[in-house]
Amino acid sequence: MLTLDRRFTFRGQSVAWGAIGDGPPLVLLHGTPFSSQVWRRIAPLAATRRRVHVFDLLGYGQSEQRDGQDVSPAVQTALFAALLHEWGLQDPEVLAHDFGGMAALRAHYLEGCRYRRLTLVDPVALPPSGSPFFRHVAAHEQAFAGLPDYAHDALLCAYIQGAAHAPLTEAAMAIHMRPWQGEVGRPAFYRQIAQMHDRYLEEIAPSYGPMDWPVEILWGEEDAWIPIAQGERLAAKLTGGALTRVPESGHLMQEDAPEAIVAALFRGM
Image (tube, rainbow, N blue to C red; front, top):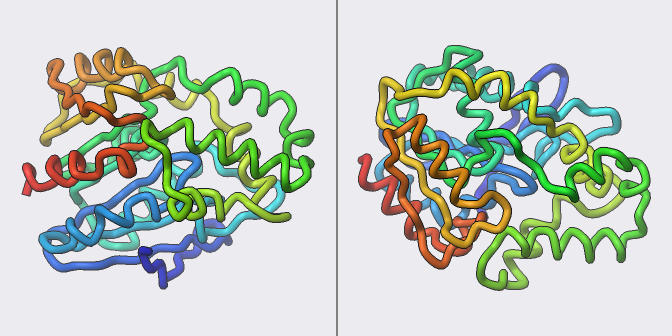
């Protein structure tokens, strides 16, 4: 397990973060509904060559969760930019997954953040995004937040497993479920889903184009959440069509094929 033993106060709320290793800076951005623990098998290897910074997005993992909290992509983008400033990182290498990819792209196009290298893993980057489940939760957030624990846990387990191609181990499932359980975690899970909206992508997608630093996009060939056709569309805009396809991997590549992510990192080191 990664240790997040430091706290950053952002707009009066506590954000958990940690750093390991020595060398040029590398920042890891997790997606939804995960936490920094999704990098637990990757960060220690990267730390043999990099100073690796990890954190939990606001409302996720060990960061603060509370009623009425704004955990929208706009807030997460501002948080990421604020952390880079707090850490004194002007052009770090960034590795981002899922919604973390949106945050990294928004931070560049809207906040002026610059990177030494950007690696995107099955990112949420092009509209339309979301699923019928997302739209249903958005329309009935309070009803879902009031589910009894047994019903919520069953739904959460099935939802998380849907991100992976191979069956998750009991230990991995417990890690990914834990932040979303109990009287605080359960409503926090539905809160972050309800606040997702395509307008946050529509603000930046027209600006996509080649960047001033290397960009690599990895996509699981078995991604059931975001089809690889989305990856091909994104690659056409950002990398001249270059796309690293990862066989036998779903959306949750950190569990299905962590070696593919490590290989991509080491190619850039």
